[in-house]
Image (cartoon, rainbow, N blue to C red):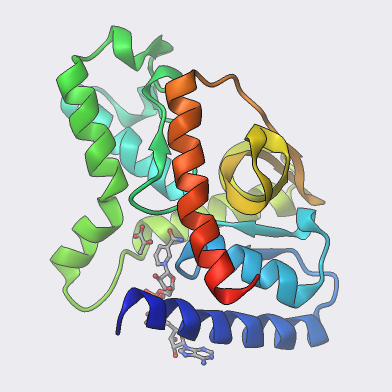
Length: 223
Ligand SMILES: NC(=O)C1=CN([C@@H]2O[C@H](COP(=O)(O)OP(=O)(O)OC[C@H]3O[C@@H](n4cnc5c(N)ncnc54)[C@H](O)[C@@H]3O)[C@@H](O)[C@H]2O)C=CC1
Ligand SMILES: CC(=O)C(=O)O
């Protein structure tokens, strides 16, 4: 099955499942996991008719957990000391942000060589594929499940927790009318706020490329 075939097939499944869920739970908050993630979040948003705050996608929590693990292994410290920051779509164009990633509060560029950072950024981008290559017939399940639990816990317990999630943007980060991975505040209303951070021109250009890749998919399926 080509990527386009998969896009169209999952578009049909996610649209249909969302409409059925809405019949029974019209006030739900939807946490979308299906791939291609950002395009499927937008599919669920359109199919549900829910306000944008109630449709959110899981990818950034997983991608930043992977980045944290890779950093911790590289510098041989507890993963508890590491914070990692990933923006953008859940694909090869995702935007890991070393400047906002820290080891015990120290920004990554002050802690690791440029070469090591570049290796970790690349491995983070390809993390999903790395697991699929090991499993052969399926994709990652343990870390994605833990990421979903963290998001649902933040919503159910109204934690107001800032997590990287896919949310519908209307001008934030210069992106309009597209679901994309950004830091958001998650609480009982769903996406309660999109947190905007300052990006360098290079980081903004990388985010723009990632947004363009997601928009190509949403335009193909007309969502
Ligand atoms: N956002 C993320 O970070 C991640 C996303 N994923 C994505 O999550 C999705 C599911 O992955 P897995 O659970 O590993 O796949 P899986 O193959 O284990 O499960 C898919 C399920 O969908 C059901 N299904 C198939 N066609 C259906 C239909 N027409 N209506 C209703 N249900 C249908 C199947 O019966 C099966 O239970 C995939 O798109 C995968 O790429 C997986 C891991 C991480
Ligand atoms: C399957 C997938 O999207 C992941 O493991 O990142």
